[in-house]
Image 1 (tube, rainbow, N blue to C red):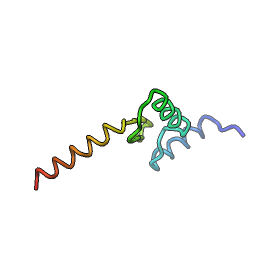
Image 2 (image 1 turned 90 degrees about the vertical axis):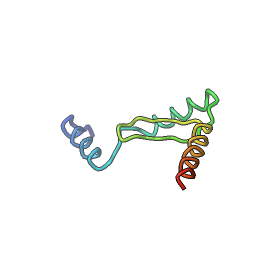
Image 3 (image 1 turned 45 degrees about the vertical axis):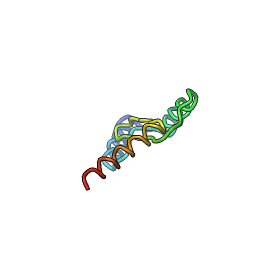
Length: 76
């Protein structure tokens, strides 16, 4: 069953208004596979509402967490 262009736009608008995003699982899988192929140890994956996929290396995540803790500790 084909969806007319008008219906496709309405479905897309409805998904976005309900908090849906523009990414597909296959895009996420490809991004993760690509990062792993080049030897990256994945620490975190972020998917933004516009569909942007950000992959952070394990070392980046650990240092970021440590920096946040140190800033918090300094305020005490």
